[in-house]
Every structure is written in C-alpha cells, then in structure tokens.
Amino acid sequence: MAETNPSNPLTGTRTRILLFEHPSFGWFWFARVASGMAFQMQAVAVGWQIYSLTHSTFELGMVGLAQFLPIVLFTLISGQVVDRYDRRAIFGISLGVQGVAGAFLAFGSWGHWLGVPGIFAVVAVLGAARAFQGPATQALLPTLVPSPLVPKGIAWATGAFQTASIVGPSIGGILYVYGAQAPYAAAAALSLIGALLVTRMHMGGNSAPRQPVTRESLFSGIHFIRKQPVILGSISLDLFAVLLGGATALLPAFAHDILGVGARGLGALRSAPAVGSLVMSVLLARRPPKNAVGVKMFAAVIVFGLATIVFGLSRSFALSMGALAALGAADIISVVIRSSLVQLETPDEMRGRVGAVNSLFISTSNQLGEFESGVTAAMMGIVPATVLGGVGTLVVAVLWMRLFPGLRKFDRYEKRPALRRAHSDRNDGSS
Image (cartoon, rainbow, N blue to C red; front, side):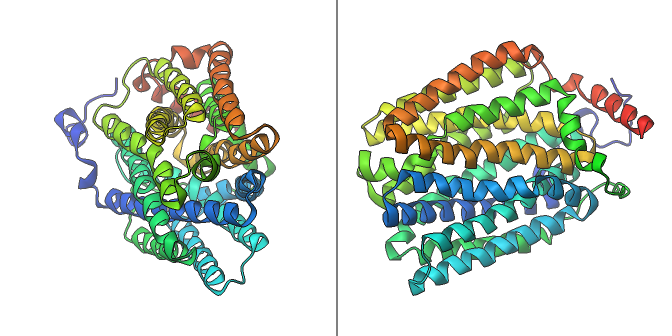
C-alpha cells in the first residue's frame, strides 16, 4: 500500500472525484462521440453502397481488408510518433484527415463519379488515419485523469463510442435515403468538429524525454507485451474471438437478403450492439470489475460467441436485434478489462508503442475479421459462416483458459502497479 499523502486530492474520499471535474476529459469524451458517430455513419454508408453496387459478400469483406492493411503498415511508426510528439495534435490531425476523406466521399457520390475502386482507396486513407488515432487516444486518456480514475475513464470513453455507435448508424441509415453523399457529408462535419474539440484539451504530467529511434525502440512495444502474459492473453483472446465472430461485417447482407429491412433496418442492426455496449459500459463505469477479473473476461467472450450463433440462426428482426445487443454487452466487458490492463500495466513513456500494438490487435479482430467473414460467407453462405464464427469463438475461449492460466486466475487490478513499476525499473537499468 502506498503511503497516504495529505496533500494528495486522490486519497480518502477524494478517490470519488467525478471524471467530468477534469475539463480535458470532458472535451476528450465529446471528441470521442463526434469521431465515433462519423465512423459509424461512414461504415453504414460504405457497406450499403458497396453491397448495392456489387451484391457481393466478398466485396464487403474487402472493405475490412482495405482498412486493415494501412494499419499494419503504420503500426510501428504510429507508436513511435505517439510517444515522441504531442498526442493531442496526432489525435486532432487524424480526425482532420478523416473529415477531408469523408468530404471526398460525399462529393464523389453526389457527382456520381466515385466507383468501387475509389471508395476502397478512400477507405484505405481512413484506415491510415485511424492507425495513428488509435494509439494516440489510448495513450492520451491516462494523462487526462488521475490514475485511480483510469478504469472508470476507460469505461466512460468506451461508453462515448458506444453512444455514437447507437446514434450514428441510425442517422446514417436515415440520411442514406437522400443519397450516399448525405451521411458522408455529415460524417465529415463531425470529424472536423472532433478535431476542434481536441484543441481544448490539456494533458497533465511531464512529457517523457524523446529517445532516439532505434530498431529496439521500434519493436519495444511488441517485446513488452510478449513479456506480460496477462496482457498478451487478454488482447489475443479478444483478437481471435472477434476475428472469428465478426457477424457485424455481414449486416448489409443480413438486412438485404435475410431480414429484408433495407438501409434503415441496417442502421438499426448496426446500432443494436452499441445499445448493449452502452448499457453495460454505464454499469461498468459505476461498478468496474474489482475481483475475478479474468473469469469475467472469459465469461464475456463465451456469451459473445453464443450471441453470435443466435444471431446467425435468427429469422426474426426483433430476435436479431436482441442477439446483437447481448453481443455488444459481452464485448464491452472484454474491452474495458483489456484496456484497463494495458493502460495500468504500461509505463507512460511506452504507452504509444504498446497502444499501437494493441490497436493492431483490435484492427486485426475488427477489419480483418470483416474480411474473413466476407470470404467465408462467399464460400459457404451468410448463415453458416456466422454460426461457424460463433462456434470458433467458444473454442478460442476454452483454449485460452488453458494457454493463459494467469489471465484466468487474474483477480484485482490493485495488485498490478507494483509489477509494472518493477518492469519499468528493469528496463531503465538495462538501457
């Protein structure tokens, strides 16, 4: 236990300081809402536009691949940039690039001169921008609030994205009635608003000195994660679970061919996981996991797999919405636990590099998962591909319990900071 410092506002009852008493966190939260809404509106528009033009689940999968490849290309670079330069500026520039890309999609769709190859090219640009945004936001949050508030801050920040994921797809689906240019233009405006909000934030603490870029520093994030089995187990579990259970990639096909609910129905389907996520993130913000953290993470992944299977077999719009909501609620538990582990275990001077690797894992599970789902659906059909993905998620959960017993037995966050400091001290002594 650390000694109590009377001048420390985080001791005693002050540990319950409201997050939004820190103004920078408030601006961060609203920027996350704006950028999340932009992302979701673009996702609805791109998915429906591509499927309308091609009627191909394989092409839907290619959307995920187009976003994933730039993230792989820039992962090591983005981590270095985030650890060496102003994280606020990187966050803001990333949002600005996304705003310009969204405007390009809007003008191209309005003028009817933007075809499928052009859409894929812009999607790749968006993926490159998010390759920097992901580690920047992960590394930025712990500098905006005191350490005891980081788990709750992560839950609230995740809730911000889920709020956007509820509103964004619904608005995107409604705006699509007026043409693809409408949701693209709205997404562009929201991205630029988010960039402006970022300028209002102020980071706490002192910036770490910039170290020269070496081969060792480029791969230091990977080496750090490899030496932390609890972190490695948590992010790899999430990776393979979502990679195999990526039902959301096929939502345009389900909306069009299985449920027959059109673009508005697609917006509702894309919002359903976020509804479950938001409800759960509010609960986690009030009562974050305090014990049996590893068991809860595995239980959440199992529920995620079961919900994916139910969704794949459903022919009812209401049941499909319910399954997706349950899927989202289970996923957010895994997200909050994984994010808390990564942030609390990682020294600040390495958060950019570790965050970049974590973002790569997340993008692999999401974007590459979309590609995998599209290819599998093209080979065996929409329903079998979705059900098989859910079964695969269950298999991964059982297998990871055996491969990472430390994660399964992990109990409380409070026991971890000493280990993190010890690891940091060893690294300092060896450099």
